[in-house]
Length: 114
Length: 112
Image (cartoon, rainbow over all chains, first blue to last red; front, side, top):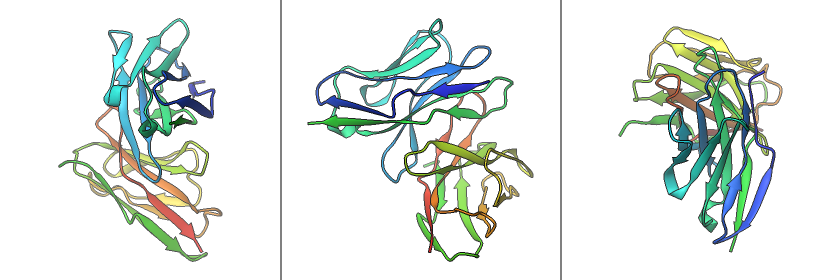
């Protein structure tokens, strides 16, 4: 079955420390992977995507993600966290069969403390 | 600027009443989607439409209805048959596979 897993409901980091939000996926064929961020009472905003090419993808607000095919992972990272990075993060992957539908993970709340 | 607009931002409904949430996009996207988000939960797909005059049920379509008469518009009706309608509703649109989604800012529906 096609799926996306975000194993941590919440990640806590101190401001200035590196952060990682984990994502693993299960889909047949080549995955198209996305990260979105959601601030309270707002819609989701696009951060970055992996379609093909370089395994390290750079996105908005200093975020990056590393695609690892052997581990079927697409972890979101940032070298130095900001308090303003505190939000809900969603990983997503397109299902196979060209359905055009994104499959979303359950979301991970990132809390950055001063 | 191109974008996707949901209205209203907040909506209150009495039990037993139908209510329609608006979603309009000027991005020329073919596909549109409705999701429901509950506190502490992820996104659940209600309905989606990949082309005008056609739509499909998502994972939790019961108690909801949609129409897609125009490319720009994909309104969602929450009917009285929906047993627990209080939630945050998100509309999204997409140009196609691998392009990702553009989301609206959401409508918070509260049943009083």
